[in-house]
Image (cartoon, rainbow, N blue to C red; front, side):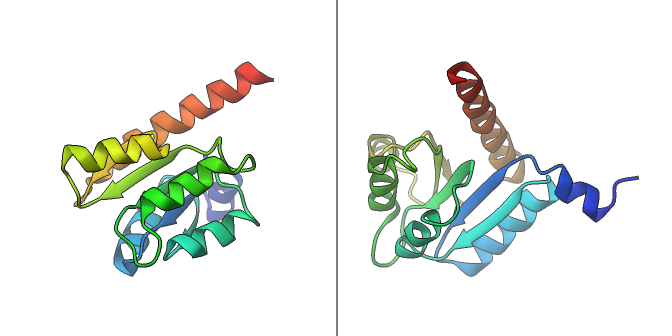
Length: 141
C-alpha cells in the first residue's frame, strides 16, 4: 500500500514552477505532486533566481510574461550561471507565435508549452526532459 510517506520517499525529481499567476502555480504544483514530484514555486523572475541560490531543481517550468523580468531574461540568467546552466527549462506561455517560441529556444529553453496547458502534455514533456537529463548525467559519470 502506498502511503504519503512512501510517495515522498519515491520522488521522481524536483521541479521549480515559476509563474506570476497563483492559480497556475497551484494547478501545476498539484499536478506534479500527484505524479510524485517534489515541487517548489516562485512568483516572479527575481524570486526564482533567489531560490536557485539555495535549491537546485531537476527541471524548471517557466512562464514567459511576468512583471519585472520576463521568462526569457530569467532563462538567460539561469543559463549564464555555471551552477544552474545544466537545468532544463520548459517555457509555459499564452504566447503561441513562432517568434516567441524561437526566442525561448534562443534563451536556452529545451521546450515550449502553450497555455492553456493540458495535463498529459505537461507530464509527457516533463518526463521526457528529466529522462534526457538523467541519461546525460549517467553518461558524464
